[in-house]
Image (cartoon, rainbow, N blue to C red):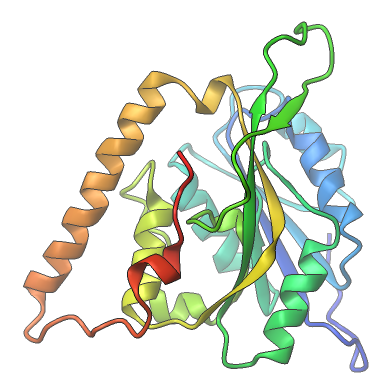
Length: 258
């Protein structure tokens, strides 16, 4: 697929949605359709298959006229997102994991905020966490119900980014299989990348059996420890202290509800 360049009179910049996927056959078709129901124009959708061994490639092939599909050996979500960033044509970037969804017209609202506030590098909204209803039989469509109040926190899918921000901050660190988003946002904070929070729900973060296991939670905690150690190491490696971020930690990141 060749993504056309925006027309000279197009009111919005080209926006690239990057969708990393690993063995996501049960969610991928819904996620791709969902991107296009946003009705944002002009839009580019890149699906990065991170070495899936299920039917992910076949499902992506059914959308070959609408998406750009690339495949790589399994290297983790950070590497998959980086691949998408490297080949993206859009001035603005958004990331969607295949098991999450956006609210209606999120891309319009966040992209418009970037356009009207050229000093802002990241436009972020609130997250509504959703948990799988296990009382619904597996033979029925999945049902997710909301838990907690909407909140602001680190989740790459809850924002739209200027692509130039990644020139400043760098790409996601492929050394992290988990918590790579925390590491990236900490570096954005250290670089004083301006971020605006739009006070409305933009993302439905759907937690289910594959991302709620005890093993995953243990790995996530270990990943956070590694992220904070990496920050300390960055400070020690510098000849001068890390710059003082202009915005307090809690204001920049928000707070997880659980």
